Length: 85
Length: 262
Image (cartoon, rainbow over all chains, first blue to last red; front, top):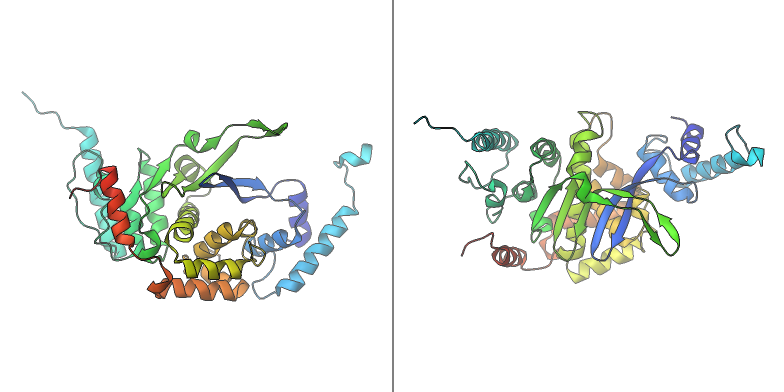
């Protein structure tokens, strides 16, 4: 999967990843959609999903992710609700 | 009068025989227990003789009727490398139904919190872990199920290791390595806080072998977080990293629960 396709899937809310739910002394693992709010989290998951090779440096991968997210923010698709607003 | 064979006892006996053969093949040794009825898994829960973390985990998994999930979990256990110190004190790992692992939708602070289905959980006050058995059987391909079981199991055991078993010095050292999850690079889950970071790093180190087309998670931890990797390496080899009295604490809790005689 390309990085572009990866962030597009995240924006569509299609990528579910484990997340935490803490209630008192209980720690639960729930599945939640990954968002584009945290580029570091997206970078970590991109490595996990094989978007980047393991040999890629973290800093370079992070900068590519930031660029991809910025690029996505500038594009509007037909399904984007802001388009008709 | 013709003697009627108890089908439940027969099922448990055949399951136990198959399991013993699997354990033998995997090099896992647990004390043999009488079969033929009752809560077999509860009887198997004495891991005072366990020689490895894997054997200890196998001994405290309770099926609660989820025999198919038990098969998947057993395959997942074989994929793990665990120090027995990490498991001591953990009272049980229960294979729960989906309904028991679901938090219903609520309104909190005027905001609707949707229904959340947990894959696994760890109750620190009870030192007990739970795995969503229904999700484990239903989701994922046949070949990927054991890997998912291994990941969930090792994550929840990681919570136990961190919150109940680490020595104070080791816990403080981890806190400085993690910086509340800010230094996590291995998964987005681990970035939440120190506790989740530990569980994720622990889970990665506990999976040393490659699975399907994925590189070993342990190798990925080494590449992504060398400092966390070095910490985990010491956990696996240095007993001084752990809180003392693990066996005694375990046996005390078992006696309180009535699960251990003497």
